[in-house]
Image (tube, rainbow, N blue to C red; front, side):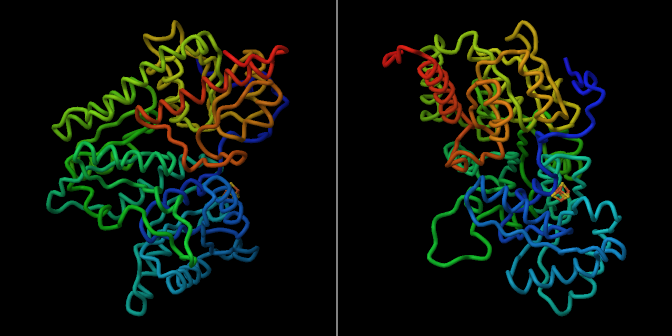
Length: 458
Ligand code: SF4
């Protein structure tokens, strides 16, 4: 059942350590997955600095986010002139072929019409400057999470750039916010099926590139704008996210405008969700599951049998991005771990339904689901549920993991207190295998740490 734990505490009115990040931050990560694109915040320098810090700390890559650097007087007179000046600087300094403009709390509050300002800008400078694509997305953070900003930016790119034309034979893949390693894994998987795809966003190189002798202002990689332009001519789109509403998603835009068939799937974590993805690829490619993935599936099932004795009956609290929560809950239910609480700062309104869908027929009853909550509320609820495990981002470490003395398995965004987040693989049979091993080993480590004997053989 979904409940609002705030109702139990009428005197508590503020948010303490929100279980979400700000909306334009998500948009910046999505724009970073477009080739030669610079994310641009229409707002103050402070917002851009906060977002850079968050993204760099997770991906450990340089991350430029331009800003219109508004001050007090712009809050009164409007930020249009600064936005135009900032765009000229980015075009001249970076040579960007696309700029993704996201609004912030400030510019949403003062009511800047970014669409109109960009329209004016194009008219004013079309003759003098080689203008890049200007994509804009409205991201008032007071009414959304980083995932709203992320999906909003992907949808905006498709909405503002995509057309149809000659059939490309290339499918569209909208993977959501997953790791660069996950994107690389998806690319290899598609290749194994003989499929080519436009993956949006593609952060596999832009947010996890090789060390370079010379600094590049814009990292290589990303989904080419030309591929976005022809997305309407694809034979199909695949979109991950059971919480994501197709009526307001990039895949939904393509389906509505060009009739591009849309397959909405859960993030492929766990056997059932990955099976559904593989079946879709079999259907689209006309090829059976490649041997390498058949073997990976078989090994995963074998591991589940071997590891079941460590996990059976363990209780888990899952928190973070809604779609990641749903996929993790589905997987935990499969492996005999009881998800007792699923909590997110997101507010799609679809979390409870999605959790019920993926646990139906496996769990005798669905776990408690709390949407739009902060870590104070999650901790209060989790304390009563006595979990053995926590699965979510590293923001839950200090307030949740330490207080409950329960180990945290780090998944999602952000992960600031571990190394290698950009190389963590969650998706497909192989990603599920990695995750399964991590969960089992975490349980074993905790047992060892709590033991007076110090078992060396468990
Ligand atoms: S003020 Fe709004 S846009 Fe800026 S960092 Fe905070 S939540 Fe994000």
